Length: 436
Ligand code: AMP
Ligand code: ZN
Image (cartoon, rainbow, N blue to C red; front, side):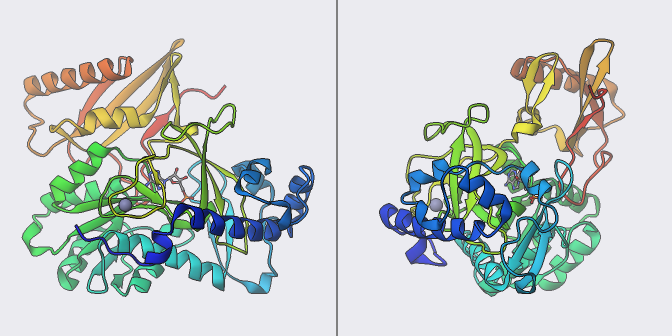
């Protein structure tokens, strides 16, 4: 395979040169952060009073972590480090876990962010001949405008369709010959189910590839989307605290995500001890934004679980790859004392052909015990009127889940298309236990 690079020099920069570049950027971003009272206080407490107090990349370890709580405490302008009149845009986190946090951008920040998104898009093989339908929420969420600008930078024809309204999405795809789409994986599965329902013929569509991100999904879900839609799916990772999309992305080798290390400095730490974990092991991803002046954020605890690959990627890029993010430290459910990530359930059910494209995990209290119910849609070929095979299927799902998660869930089967679909990030867990 021949790989294409948006910025070959940067993407294939030899490690020592990449690290030297990171150090220069880190010094600059620390100097910028020192313009905010929050970081002035935090950093002076550890003896960092200027960018020059950072002498090597190991000095990063001296900088205290920044948490979502810190960012909230600074709402609305506490983390702004340039004059307000230099700010051209704001975005906010979608509030996956509580009140949103705000990020500000200067013109230069938008330009740099756009170039990382363009680099990501280009790494999947897209060119200016592509027609790109951005089927994701526009607005405060970074996924809409982030991909929009990146797509235009690559030179693609960008259709700002936004999320939802599948009938209109199909019409746009057919009218303009869409070749590339961006959506959450759950919306892509929904699109596929709707295509069948509405009788949209695949051979009338020119789709080649999809960028799927904004929420965790398993490798089985990727395979399912690829097979059902006959499309190449690339994993896209980002978060508003680090600009948005374009932080880490899969290249054409499709073997997990290159972290763009000239823009984002990554560490993996043990979420309990906050000590670094060895390469390859799973831990919490901590990121420092090296490419933004308006809102510097240092050593941000993303709560996302990942790990670094140690082997090089066949594409020749020197930027390390991150494992697919399987969940967040705060996603973890404790069911009668047993730790469980929703992704463990997804992995099991999405590998079963008879299971449909949508599911929901319900957690309740029954007396003193926690009760978990896995509601899944069935595939269109399963007849809902025929109870015997349905019961057999239900039992098979239950047993497979029990064997893998060591918890005995209830299983409910639902008609295709009957479970709620979100236009943004999917809600996979409804925890109805009383809060302690
Ligand atoms: P937001 O700041 O609202 O854009 O949300 C960012 C969060 O979405 C990240 O911290 C992750 O938890 C999640 N996320 C984004 N992209 C992915 C992805 N490709 N895989 C798993 N989780 C993701
Ligand atoms: Zn690669």
